[in-house]
Image (cartoon, rainbow, N blue to C red; front, side, top):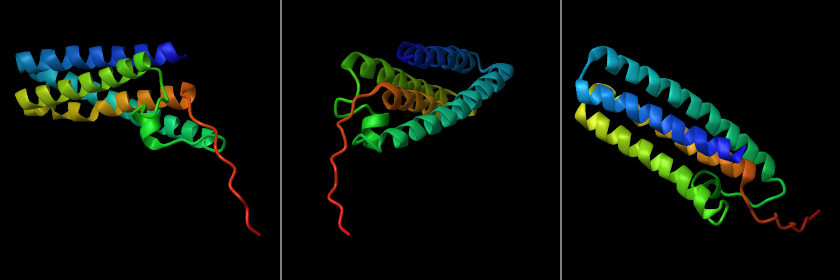
Length: 142
């Protein structure tokens, strides 16, 4: 499952990059519309994945010390370096593509929404496979 999340992240980045680059390079109106459609679909998928990752992290937080930065940004050793590099690299590529293509052609500004998917997939990987310290027992007062 972990490798599928990484592949999904890079695949969505590639699809986004190809469509956005084609639309930015040509200025073709139908390609700009197709790019916006791809952007919105990837954003909506990102919202769903982000929420699924959050729900999984909340469930795990009953037994483990989980921080938001550990889940979505893979900080604190919650993921192996290679996995972290892949998922955050894909997120960085999505962000760069979004900024560059929006700067070239303003109708492509919908691309700014796409990194939500990269962030959500990083969170999903970590919430599902990440390593977190066990929660310490708190003293209960009556």
